[in-house]
Image (spheres, rainbow, N blue to C red):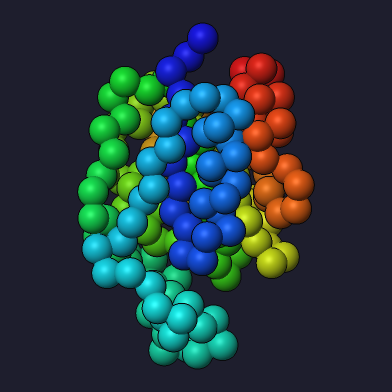
Length: 156
């Protein structure tokens, strides 16, 4: 059995709940990725082109700093969860991916979204972590979570 870690960034709690379901179902640790400066409601306003998240998403070089970077050395498989913002992963995820040695690891992506898919985020993460095996998981809106993760892990 591979060593598994669930790593999640969640600005509003939706993605965190899915990460908790996965970690509980697999009986593995969960690591919450937290920005050094928390996001406010105003920062998350996608209708404001000057909001923090709008500016980050429009800047391909934006890498918001993390409070703490998880030590991923002991893990073979990392479930990586995040919300989809403007059809892509939050730039905080790019910070994690670029700052971690993910060579030889399998990343299973999952996300929550109001309507955008995972394809663009998967491509970006593959670019940022060429030594890792990146698997596009699913949008986990609704009832999916722990059972989905168990099935996905069994298929590896």
